[in-house]
Image (tube, rainbow, N blue to C red; front, side, top):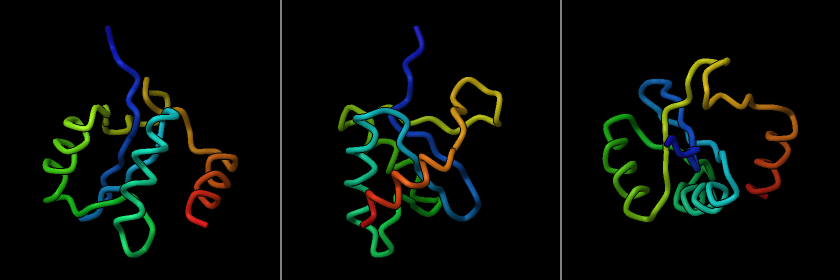
Length: 89
């Protein structure tokens, strides 16, 4: 059985950006964004293993976003962008 990830991430070396994919993923995203001075849920690529471990220990599932058309790619819509703007406000 495959679990829907709470967060998906993209690697744009050297930065890894996280996006919520479930309601509980929004909570994790908020917590991550609060710790970043720019208000984003991201890390440097060399920090990724530790961040993924922390997320797993907190009970969250994070997976790399597959190319569009893949199982985890739900597509980032204007509604998603509006939601992230509201979360950052």
